[in-house]
Amino acid sequence: MRKLTPREIAVIGMMLGLSLMLEVMPIEMPTMWGMKIDLVAVPVVMAYFLTGFMGGLVAVFLLFVGLSIVSPSSWLGASMKATATLAVLIGLEISRRITRFDFENASTEKVILFAILGFLAGIAIRIPLMLALNYYYALPIWLGVPRELVVQTVEEWTHVPFWVAIGLPNAVQSAIDVFVGLAATLPVLRSLPHILE
Image (cartoon, rainbow, N blue to C red; front, side):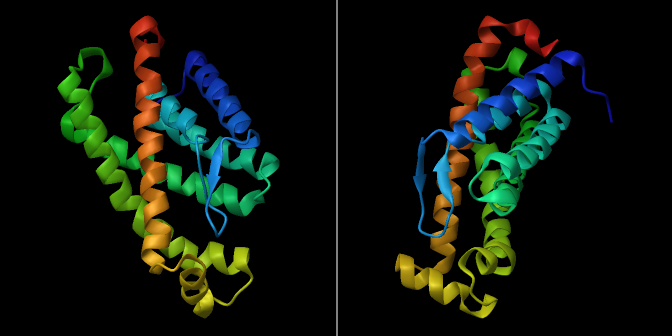
């Protein structure tokens, strides 16, 4: 495990500040049970692109700490956001290793392949993980109902199966995290290629 450079620490700090700013700004689409479709994890994904997997892990941990302090959904929402974002980063890292993706030598086709594979790998991890965490952990606390009533409660509110009510917003959020994060990072890397050095 390598140490982070001062430049990487600075990038992570800037991205964390941006994430926390996006948390307190009203740029979001709420769902019925507390999840928000938002841009909060996009800077963390950008930190991953700019600093690598270790930097992304540090950013996810700091996101949890920061959101626990500033988010109205407290430590509970922070833990869910951080865990979901970790799943996105793992999917991107799997894609990077499979495709041997490198920003410095990436063609448009390679960027698209990397992004799509990263998104698919991420949701293959995120959706089952969020289904389990919502059922066993978050929604019993958030809704104040016994675990046995979580599925029924969510389905009564949303009028769709539990797995759709949880899975669909998480897939949409993953798409925003991956594709907006990549779209925001590419111009930075094109204009400041030395940031990866």
